[in-house]
Image (cartoon, rainbow, N blue to C red; front, side, top):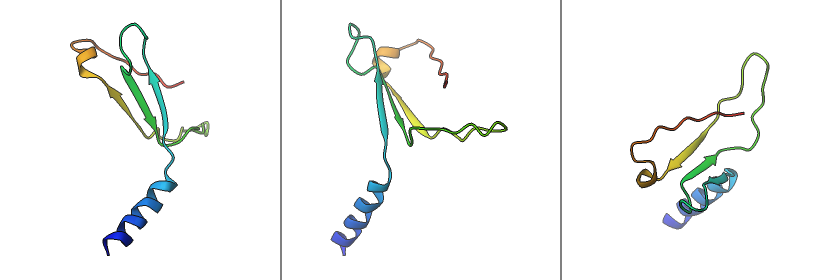
Amino acid sequence: MKSNAAAQTYRTMQKHIIFYSSICQPQNCMDCVTIYLGKRDFIDHVEYVEPVDGVVLVDPDIVKEKKGFVSIN
């Protein structure tokens, strides 16, 4: 039973492709900001834009008390 559930989970995970990007200045750190997006392209329908589904991971030791802003273009 467990192996069947694991196989089903694996098949479900295969359907989801995650696009990954890491943004950082090389002299500061290896992976300061990491972005995971559920899909690569988002369509502008003139009246609305598809919701952006993703995660931004920021290293708290690097950020400390700094503020950050995000813009999607």
